[in-house]
Length: 383
Image 1 (cartoon, rainbow, N blue to C red):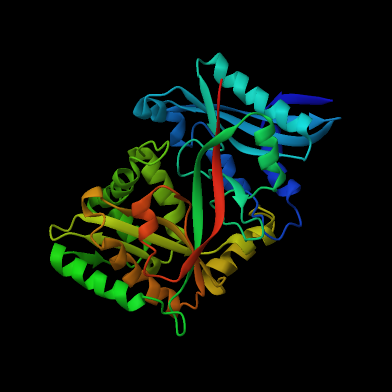
Image 2: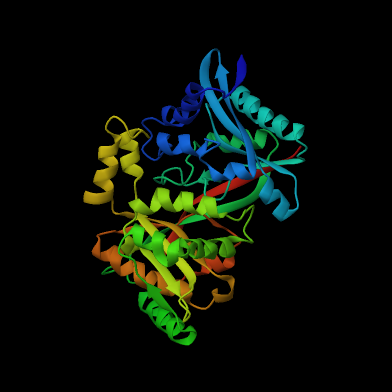
């Protein structure tokens, strides 16, 4: 027998977050949710997304044992932007039991239906900054700290419950162009040079995270993220980040970045027109930490960040203002980051998920040696 319990206490919330690590414990490809980060994500006072989102978390128990979880979400800003009445499901995990998955999904569907929604889509988070898309290919590839890993059986459960494809994202493994793997790297260097000269562009460098956060009286970081807002505006389900969200992300994550792996491209008025950022993979460190900072998780994370990083570079964000797209600006970003990645000893880079039908985004990798190694899906169903 399956029972559903709404998350109401901090103990419930920790059970919700830690279920993912429990379900995938021992799986060499899954990366657990980071407990401390997830506690903030679901904190209605700390997460700025709750200014325009509402949501509830649910746990499923089978014969008294925790067997699944799901978040039911409505992003009102996204619905207004796209002119729809969608609810979302996210952070969904379940054992391979159709009774459990059905109970979870039906709960999320009913939650959305009661609030006047006519469609449910997912897995999606509150915003695009949260993990999204159910893995449907690439189960033998290491996941990242910002994406979802799930077992292959999830897809069959979704199809059984009447869900169809909304859209797919793909992820690429990009070989860092060191000796023997140059591919067309010289070509993208020529493209970068042409773009800089033709459009009067240059790269602005920063020594540390405080410098970029305090630049222009604290306004510069807002301009950088505005590039992301405008670059992603037409992408599936995107909702624009507000100032509070931007500062939340900046203060949380910039302190862990190596500024050499951040590239901000400016025009001749010194205004940002493109940005790209990477970070050494923390996947293995999070596995060793079992998704928790304490008691010893901090050691594995600090070791990976500051002393001995993995050979994988996670490319977190790449954004170019629409008016500068298809003008070779991406090549300037790679021209800056790739040599640094070589010097730091990275072997390959992992792209963030990109919509399969986003031709501009897909084309940026054409001059680098790479291949698609993961695919993930957003499912949808009418309510």
